[in-house]
Image (cartoon, helix red, strand yellow):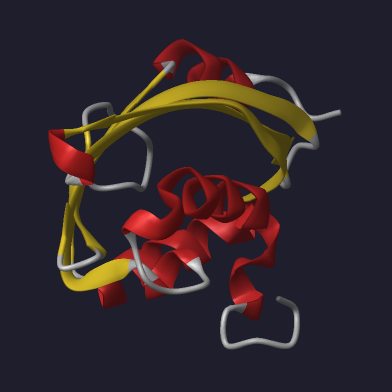
Length: 144
């Protein structure tokens, strides 16, 4: 990925790889942003500083993730559990991410559950839940 059009997102590659693997042949495209529809709605049901509750469109999602990649390096994404429903049109994934807050070098470990709706072999809607306390603790911890 470093030499690709998605090189700026290298710090979050494990997350993108986990999602791409979870969706398998239900979607078309190699990279996370290839499998997201142009008019995707990416919704988070938690408050995270600098991150809006609703992001509309692939371009805005890419811009937001570029900022995320400037602040957090994800070293691993694992413990994937995927639940495919509605003939594969809805996929619920549970997973963990592990990384480092770049500004402070504090370790970041979090758990997520995401509900993904697929239309025309692309992610049309994403609803995300996370362990807000884990994020808060990582962001508020003193620098190392």
